[in-house]
Length: 186
Ligand SMILES: Cc1cc2nc3c(=O)[nH]c(=O)nc-3n(C[C@H](O)[C@H](O)[C@H](O)COP(=O)(O)O)c2cc1C
Image 1 (tube, rainbow, N blue to C red):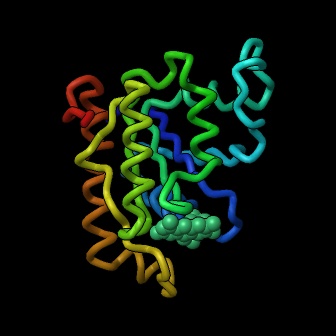
Image 2 (cartoon, helix red, strand yellow; image 1 turned 30 degrees about the vertical axis):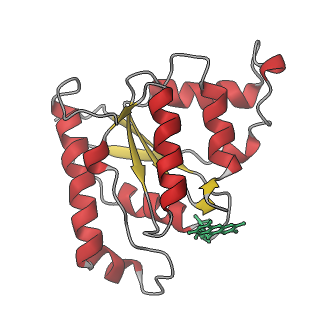
């Protein structure tokens, strides 16, 4: 297994108590041996996307694009707002559309809420049109919305364990067979 695999977690919520960020933090704390995951915490610093100011890009955009460029795998966990994706994640992805940075990039779309199906579908569609390598078998639901228990209890719950296994199985496979791990896109 490669120790140099770079995994980037991207929470699509700016809320201090974000369930989606908590999900990514929990996964980051449990990564398989030899792997590390960092969270991108600066999406709120991106300006609203405007093609007129794309070249040269603002500093915050350069920072975001560099993080994406360096990542071997991207895990996105983002909530649903009014049956759509959050402006935060859509804005961030819009900045990346005209570059090649997401082409063939392995991406897992994690969903912290079983009822958030519109945003999940819309996010997958956006990533598909960007030609990201959507790892559908590991783009799973972690039923965390409304959960009031401790992290320990959540981490031990069967639904969480099952979803985490699916994520880590694909991440581990990508670490050993970057090009050959199960395919994507739908
Ligand atoms: C403005 C707004 C709109 C929302 N719309 C939906 C929705 O359409 N469907 C849904 O399942 N949840 C909706 N929610 C609930 C959020 O998905 C839920 O609060 C989630 O925890 C937010 O993610 P976060 O905890 O990572 O910030 C909405 C929340 C807000 C604040």
